[in-house]
Structure formats: C-alpha cells, structure tokens
Length: 385
Image (cartoon, rainbow, N blue to C red):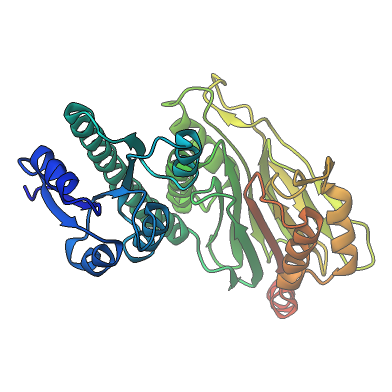
C-alpha cells in the first residue's frame, strides 16, 4: 500500500526535522521552508494532509491554506503555532476555515501522531462513503432506466383508440405506472396504477403490476381478471403493500367500456358541450388484507365523441400553500381543452407547475387520455350494417 503523503511547511528547519522524525517512519513526508516553496511543490506531492505553521514571513498559514486548497482541494490541514498571543482567536479562525485541527508548538509527539492517524482514518471513511454513494447512484440510474423501459411510448393509436400519456416521478424511482395493449380487433386495454411508496421496492412492484396486466392477453385483458391477478401477486406481501388502479377495456365495435376502479381516483368521461362524469370506484385498494376478491366490473356506454381522462392521486392531491390542486382545477382544464389529447395533458402539467410555484412535488404524476377516432367509429357502423 502506498504510504499517505504529508506536506509540512515551517520556516524553522528544526521544526521540520522534528515533524519528519515523528511521521517519516510511517508516511511519505515532504518538507518546505517557505509558503512559495510549498505552493510550487503541491502539484507533485499531492498531499493528503498539510501541516502548516501559522506565522511565516511570505504569507501566513491561513493564506497558504486557502491557496493550497485552490490547487489541491482534497488536502486536509493541521495548523500549528508557537505564538502565545491570542490563541483562541487563531483557533476560531482555523475552525471557520475548516482546518482539521489546531495545535500549539512545541507539540507532544503522541498528540501529533494521533491527530494524523485520526485525520487519515476519517479521509478513508469519507472516500469509502463516496464510493458507496457512487455505486448507489449508478444502481439507481440503472433501476430508473429499467423502470422507464416499463413504460410504452407516451402517444399511440391503438385499434382505433388514440391514447396519450404523461408520467413525472417525484423521486429517482416512482410508484406510478401507465400501460396499454391491443386486446383484439377494435379493442384496446388501458391501465393506470399507483403502488404504495417510492424507491426500489415500489419500482419492483410496478414491474409486477405490468406483468400481471400483460399476462391476461389470453383473456382479452378482462379488467376484473387483471385485478384478481394483481391481488393474488400481492398476497405474498404484507398489507402495507397495496395498489390502486384503473383498468379499462374499450371496444369500438360495441361502443362500450368495461372497467374496474380499485380504490383509484375517479376517472373522467366527457363529450364536447357536456359536463364530465366521474368513473368512480368499483372496489377498494388491492391488498393482501382482503381474503377474497371484492371488486366488481362495470360497463359504460361510449357515445360519439366521448373522451376519457385517467390520473393518479398525485395530480389532485398536489399541494401549495396548504391548498390542494383538486378536481376543480382538473375540470377547469378539461373545460378549456375539451378536445382532450396530448394538449390537455400538457395543459394540466403546466397548471400543476404554476400551482406548485417551483416546490418539489411529494408524489408521482401520471395522466392518460383516450378517445376513439372518428373514422374507426364510421368503419364499425358500416360493419354492423
């Protein structure tokens, strides 16, 4: 192992020799008789610790410490002085300028060795912590990339259904999920889900929800079957792990939507010129606390020009100055943009940014809007005729 590097600066040759005798047996010690000499040597020495005399003719130890920090920020400093005048003031200045320690000359050999050992030990711990944090950051970045890949493209036309989505996590790893899938000719399945918590465990749970959603392609993405599959998966966890979701199956030919709302915020359904109606809960949150499935599936007729908006609770529950964003502002956004689509979602996110006034959000935001394309409706009617 390469020995730690110590730079000692003092205009007294005897003091330099004394420090070299104490520390030279265990460390690489470089000695300088002047501040300028020390500044010239720092790039080559790259000291772990610099031991500086405060009173020197060219520049004092405080100024030298500042100059050395500029050239080698990783160095720690121990300041020493033989002056007996105003020791407290010098100590306070040393602390304020973040020196590791301040000692009086003549110093005790064991005291100096102990200070150097302790300083180097803290440096090693700090470096271990930096390596650990770098590894965590790398792993978080990989996990976030994985989670982002769980999300399909934010805009798509799916079996005649125009779908637009937006997702903004409040932390590196969020607990929201949106998804969609083809469910047969003229049929599209939609999902918006919110798992409890944030971080790695929440991200893993969103992966389980996505898997359960797509595993029911053989059943045509029946919403109740999807919810029961997720409930079965959660039975391996405690009741503190739960999911809310809105799962819908849209049929262009039948002009109908079947859906399950498991403890999720009410979705909205509207046509231009009509007030939005709420697609309310059809059962509680999905949790292992329930011994059997307790959710029901509902059917909703889709009228010409009807649009849907689904969202997670991070949208209406966003807070600013003690107020909630609320459903009132959501309804106002729909009234301003009745055609829906991506523009509506971007308007809502813009309104949330303005409402929060730059404050960090406490929860993830997920929005999904959907509408049947007119030409598909016409094709479906022709097929019926």
